Length: 276
Image 1: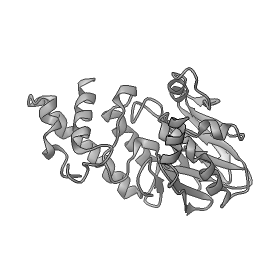
Image 2: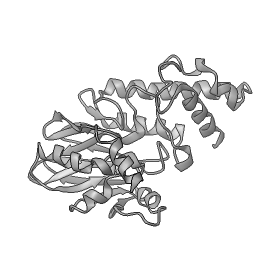
Image 3: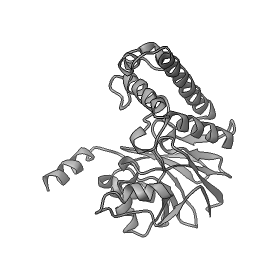
Image 4: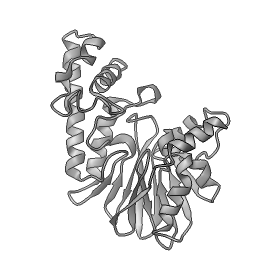
């Protein structure tokens, strides 16, 4: 009971903000990954759901722009800040959709509920609310089960955590993620879009193609720098402490309190390249 009360208390002050993007597509922010929704007569199509204690707040926020039920809920990957509310939304009728590996990862907890009931291996398309909503798997990027979601007519892309806007990425190398996969995911996303596209990143503010390109360029350069240092015989500890490999983008001081600091991203890229 005390753990539940503590978890609930952590989110008491969180407010869910609804940001209109274009047509009937919105971005919701609170705590955890950014949520995307499409509203209309076909019902609500939702992407990610943050943490369980926020579900009621999220539902109320959605009700300010739609009186329709949440029909489909896509998980861009399995991490708890994107799937924590699955059970709550499934209990009110949402059908959960995700890549095959998301269901596998969530099922590792034998008591898991709110599992995806529809899974795909590569691509899927939904036709709702005037949009062809194209979902495509990107391999071994942030995790081993990531998906990009593109609203074709509205020209809006949700990247999940394959794009952290304005910060270093978290690449979960212990669960199938890799620097090369994250680079490939950004390259694929950039191929889907144009200069007018609005982008919902996994974390950070609503983005443009220029922001996404900047992120891609950062990943490519950091990989190159770390690989060069490895080829020169530098150890993991030396690379982790070598700020010059990443400070053209973000300094260690600026990222010291971030989830992924300069030393963390350098160590991650080192380990990812070591695993090849």
